[in-house]
Length: 239
Ligand SMILES: Nc1ncnc2c1ncn2[C@@H]1O[C@H](COP(=O)(O)OP(=O)(O)OP(=O)(O)O)[C@@H](O)[C@H]1O
Image (tube, rainbow, N blue to C red; front, top):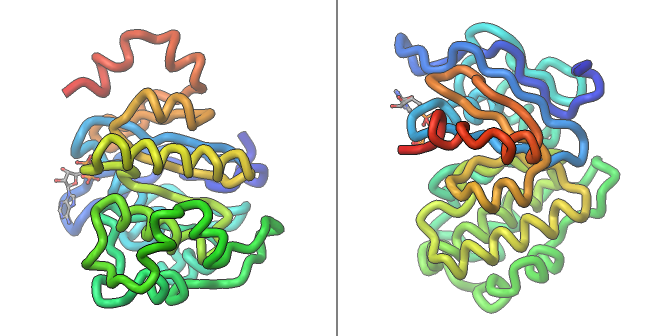
């Protein structure tokens, strides 16, 4: 795959924390309009990969390209401005700002060609948030916080939305609401890179899947290929 055609291209990436190397050979591609999952057992390097893509950790070797331009030496703020929107593990919303303030704090105009995100659109994607508009972040349930974290990322009008542990720790009914919202985003043409434990939903949402094992991309394929290889779950995902 030519990286010029891809939205995001991660090639032979190595990274880690100080002397502790975690990523040894990570490769993945997201094409425009595609939804891609990044899978692997706990501790295999999914969050570290996302942190490296977003410039929060240095890329020691290899490269990351976004829309055909190398971004692996850019500072994190410049990467975010280029159109990468992050919904981080643990949500990390501002606890002392209201829902409304959380959303407007990060708002940025679209240069994507897609319809601009605004408060009304976020509230219609997540009607639960509308009633909580004036509540502080720390007064929200976990599910509402995750909706807010997704809304906040959308308000930056990203070209690619990246979700780390999209539904972790949420009640089943709330999880379903998040998956429904992600399906709606996908239908609108949003490109998504996502990590989550729920295989059934990942296979439904995503076109393509990558599996990490000890910091190495060990498998990639589309949903029919994933479903056809019944050994994958046991080999790379079972705990
Ligand atoms: N801040 C850190 N400093 C040092 N090592 C870290 C740090 N964060 C993560 N690690 C280590 O890096 C490795 C990969 O962790 P990472 O969080 O990327 O895995 P993951 O695939 O996202 O797993 P999980 O599903 O548990 O979040 C693990 O061995 C972890 O202990």
